[in-house]
Length: 404
Image (cartoon, rainbow, N blue to C red; front, side, top):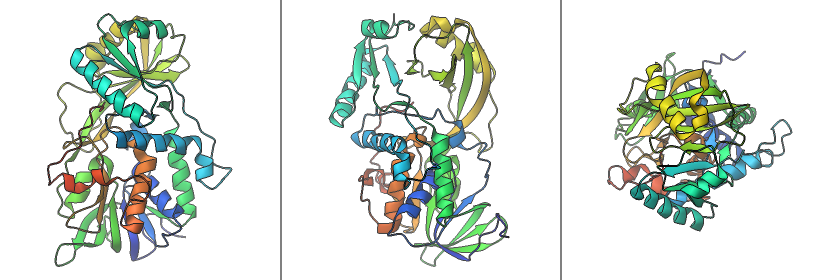
């Protein structure tokens, strides 16, 4: 019987460092590509995924971005989720999924942010989204539970925007890619060896001691991406930032779905079902934290989050927290957008990193793009070249205004 901690082979065409949502997506799309006939290994340090960003997500998707490419990325995600069984070959073990379209409600309490929402809506409409701008009166008419006394404008999209079952997609990708020959091991990459010129990673060393040759390496390490890159001598501007979440029940539940509401304070809250709601926030001081720091700030709820919720939605004055946790964003400090594709000097080192909180919804398009780049050396579906690593040394950031 194979030891699930030890690789079966000495060499692989592709080694993926990290087996959470991005690694799983890339592996599945490789396995689904008839032009990829190589071997693939996923090395995952924690197969329980207990602290992975994948398990701490809101599991929502939106098309309300300020760049057309990010809108198109989410549109593919929506199509994939709604047609997942077809995408996965008609496998009747794959559940039929849908999107619970309660939308995202951005609230602007000043003219500067209202102008951002107006400009973003124009981008979104041109990209095929269905975003609506609402005055305070219109918001109050459609969603009477809000206090909008300080609100100038709202933005919402009720088409392919809301909750989806990210865990079901994650599980399906892992199971089917394994069945197609992708190998998963519970281990950790602790070192990399490059060729004499420093232009290629020739092998990785595992925590268990094995040295494994690789043709190409994909960094899918989430908040630990900078540590993985550092092993190849690459500086990557991605760090773990702590994000806090709460599930609470309301004494008097709202009588309609609560959009994922982004309060001007930055606190966000959404429908969770059954009279419960999920809320998220971060501290005003938002430093990088240790990779293993998941300590909860229990004072934040009473001193910051609950008062904001009660002011915005008065029915939330009487609520009870049911669970709470801290997770990590893989935060791209350069421009808060994905870093994708090959390194400009270490040519067989590839990125799928830095999603800054919107990774789960982008995972179908990003995994497909990574698989295309690993197979063909180019993108063949969506042109993801704006996300190339080269924009970092060239200091050409992608300005995405809709980061939560």
